[in-house]
Length: 128
Image (tube, rainbow, N blue to C red; front, side, top):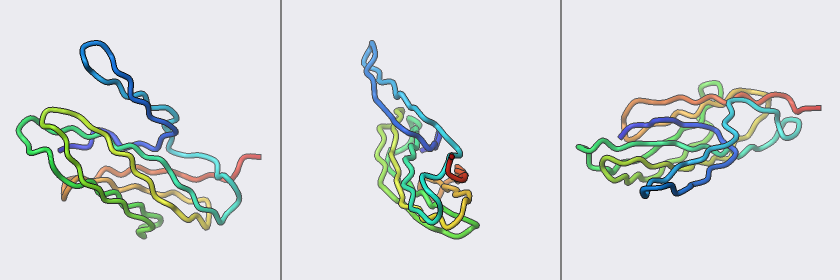
């Protein structure tokens, strides 16, 4: 299986379209944002990971997302994947992240022991 995209988002909605297909409407894609309050604070990001399974694969695996700050693991999410061969799927990932400063967190996403997709998010100072 392959990771097509991994994104921090505000919302995701599924919408059926003609012919039995489904569209995924994703809103609020972001790679940085203002902190909800001065440090220290806890932030729970919403992340979506879009995956596809080639027709010649089994369709089972495990999605692992490791969140790192300054190289240190600060949270981890692992969940099983089951995707019909030749189809696409998505998984929602959440973690509680402690921010002591206005830093960048990196989500290291992979399926089984495959290649890693790194998705950064930079926390900025709160807006005035």
